[in-house]
Image (cartoon, rainbow, N blue to C red):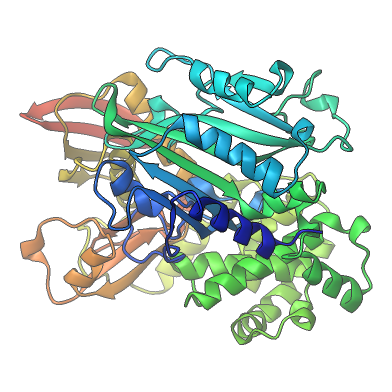
Length: 569
């Protein structure tokens, strides 16, 4: 059995021999990036160099980058348990910054797989970009693969949904200023895994039945999104990424990624400590092994459990393990994890006892678990989804609002700063304003900035910098993105900081002359971060879906839009 250390060492040495400089990995935990909490890919730190900036170490680079995908668009927490998805992994990567192109990259990666790792050529398949209105079909890569001996029945063409890469997705989804390009992926076929026809009559590399596993993605980073189209970058780049854990699984011809050396020792500990059999508890044990490795990696990078940002992700991972294995302190001696378990155990024990009594979940019962026992809503949702039941979130919100109104009648609250009208609906619309601002910037680009706003108990009005009124497609993208965040039940938290500290952490900031020595920095999950006086709701679960009702151009380069809530269908 080949180990992860052996594969990593072989990869780095292979490309070092071909003129690449081994670069140190970027920090796993990001403190000053307003778009994400963690490094989630090897190319993330290299974007300026892919766009033309000169790298001090040259034009050929290689590394192994620890990565986390547990938040935002890259949230794989609920995907773990299918033998292939992970929340923490290493991404093997090599780059050409305007140096070589397809003619060297594809033969080299083929040589690495087939010669260095001894993977049988008959087990490998490749995919190519079929072309669209902006970018032509990739015939060059096709010919290179053919010259390497890849048969036609092992070459597949796909469109922008599968063989185009950018951080935001397809070319239409890319905001202004983002880079991307067509791809050629490499897949490994586990011939021992039969095709499941519920995924279609015929199996193919991008089928979800489990027979194929992507082990490498060659991105030909050629384009930057301008206002209305793709523009070519000043140089042709190669950006290769391959998950270490997946490559190790393929090199060992085992479709279960959790049987590699990075996870199997944990699974063996669980089997021994709890007298459990892996084949009978496969999904549970995979979640435990993945989340424990992710938790330890985050802790080693200075993260501690909390209800905010990085710490919230860590807390969520640890608590999911505790749900799956309430006494999992038997398999870890990490003091941070043990302390979090201790804090959660009382709520967990009481909540699980109550859950066992529930035959059919309702929004009211979910709220009672949350209010009376501190049992997290997201865990209630997950536990009952496993039983085929859904929590009525509208009923949960109704109960939450009723409780809040009752609490208000018993005491008077005083807010520092923020809105003049602090009614329930106005507070919700204030939080919606932050989601709207962040969504506009993600869809239209970072040049968007707030120019003014006004909130009543019925709607919000938002003025922002943009040269022209939004198209119907842009409106749909912005509103869809807002509603996606609302459905994620994101926590809304704040920290008191100096204005400089908040700005350094990526908080959107306006009207600087009004700030005092301390400000509140409000965060909505990892989606929005903004200096604001408040007040806001505590979680996006308390918001209904949004809808834009009007837009108008009110001056040179300033657009005004009106948004309100509407009941979910």
